[in-house]
Every structure is written in structure tokens, then in C-alpha cells.
Image (cartoon, rainbow, N blue to C red; front, side):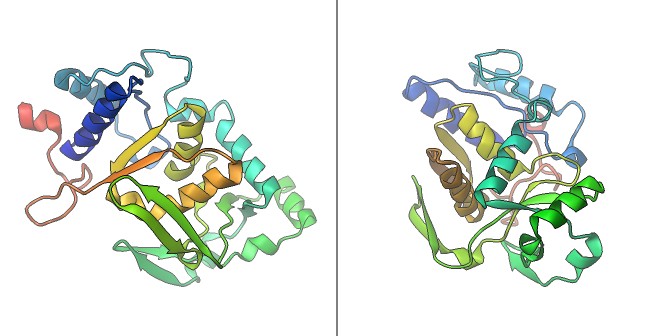
Length: 253
């Protein structure tokens, strides 16, 4: 748990206590490729050492469990809501293989090269979709974002932010392995677990319009967003466990 994560936890803890609310610990482990053995225990130890004692979590059931996303997935909650979006026309099945996706154009967003999906599978008929599913063809479920108009959301630090919908990609909600993406799981969990304030780094500002569109599609209230400036190293690069930056435990050992 690096100091950037810890700072977010500190602000979340203070906001919860100031408002008379609960500070909840949720383990977000939907990206199995990035799963690190023992990481959950490090989070527990770090929060305990810093006095950021959670009111609810995997070890303290407050009625909103399970508190581990991989366990929540087994209940079918993410697929249930993804299919609800499909029924509303706000999401769709995508059966494109790696070869076709590799042929699509790419754009650089926040320093990362991403594939711009062309909505090819949005035009599939109901019969084609059912035939693909019956044949066991691999699929993902994508958010169906419009290409016209704008989306506006509010951040407590940055104020109202408006983006052109043409800039929003049809992000994946459910991956081919059946796991939800980080983005989709957090929207579903923040609503169903009654989260009122979301505190995170400002690298998520660009994704927030897509989150807001999901909330609006479901008819859910959007939580209060607080996007924090990044804590960077001496080279002005974001602190990251994957980049080898020190964790809180490294600093106190």
C-alpha cells in the first residue's frame, strides 16, 4: 500500500467520521493478473498502524457484504446489472476476436495507447447474438456510449467538468473471463454498498463521465466525487507499486 493509496484512505476516513458515517474497507481483486499474494494482509496492517480503523470490511460485516469483489462476483451481481444495461440499450455483447481488435485504430489517452472500438457488434441482430452465445463464442460486454452531445459531472475540487461524448470509448464492463472490469465493479458496488463519497487520484477524471453515464442509465444517484492531485516521485511520475515505489511498510521498516 503506497503513500498515495494511504492518503486517499486518510481523507476517506476523515470525511466518514466528520459526517458521522462509516469507513468501509472493500478488497478490489477483479484483475486476477495483478493479484499479489499477501496484499490484503498488508492493507490490514497498514490501516491498523496508521489508526485508520475501518467500521466495515471482510472481517467486520456491516450488512453490505461480501466485501471482496471476487466473492461478490460469485453471487452474479455484476452480470445481472450488465444484462440490465443490455436490456436498456446501454450496453451490448461484443464477440470480436483479438485479430479484429488489433486491426482497429488506436489513440493515446492519459499517456496510454488504447484501441478505439468501432461499435461493430452493436449492429448484431438478436438472432446472431443468441447463436453466438449458444455456440459458446467468447464475448465481452461493452458500455454503449453515444457519439453526440456532452456529459457533465461535478468534482468537489475541480468543479463541473463537461466532455464531448465523442471522446468516450465503449469501455468493457464484463471481461471474457466473466470478471467485471475495475470500472464497472466499482460503480455497481458503490451503489449497492451505499457509498456516498468516492475519493481517488485525478488519473480517474477521464473515466468519470463513463461512470456517470452508468449511474444515469441505472437511475442511481451519483456519489460525491473528490479527485486528488497525484503524489509523484522526483521524476514527476505517479507513485505506483508496479513501478517499484516504496510502500508505507517499506518506509517504517
